[in-house]
Length: 362
Image (cartoon, rainbow, N blue to C red; front, side, top):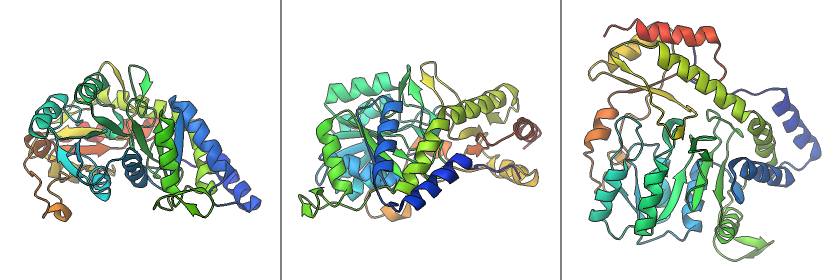
């Protein structure tokens, strides 16, 4: 079986964890601080606050910006549910805009239409999905025009860029996940990044029980601190991130140039974007996906379907009154299949994925 994902851990990560264990300081400490500095420097942002997950990073990022009860936040209906849950955790109300059918990213034209319907909107939460950045020229123009706070969900976009500027550095905050299948991992973990010192101060306060001075709690916060064990893994992974991303890109470009099945549409990389292919997500002609995934299973190729339901139609939101019909999203969700692209693949495995895809007849 050619797996859809495979975290790559080397001797460096193992030794770094052992060093932390031997030190006796396994909770949040200096190793996490070093990781925060290094990740901020890699992105080109002023501040980084490491957290326990991408979800907690989103929750804290929104709250650090003052988003709360009575606020409206515009976002995408096509993402992992954490994007919308983070809005709800803070007592705010999510509203949605459509996606682009080719990039799967929130569509700027649809954002403008949604803002006409929801002029009270305070913030825009965008998702750089599958490793591709949103159209940041259009997004920044919209955010500036409507005076919106901008949150970037970068859970799948470590090292992705728009015109050479890395995802996470455009908005008021950027939020990352370091889950094991991401482009880099800390085993579990996340981060809030920002250029704003006050936003960073509030985020750091929130992840640490509302404390700046030990046992003096200025507000109700959380225990969302990253551990030194996770930080140690992250420092090693960060050194490898660009190599991992280049391997993903090489695999993706090979597949793009060799897949010639008329039933399969390969992913795009807009001219101004650097795609880091967290997922290599194809579109299968309508009505053929079930047969396609059966074909993959029969031939030993792993796959993922991200995401089979739109966020507004999830059962947990049934009583919230969301609009559940999104024509572009509802079409795309029936077509998408993600194929193996991770850096652990051999050239032979990538070629085998292509062979299997091209041999599908529907």
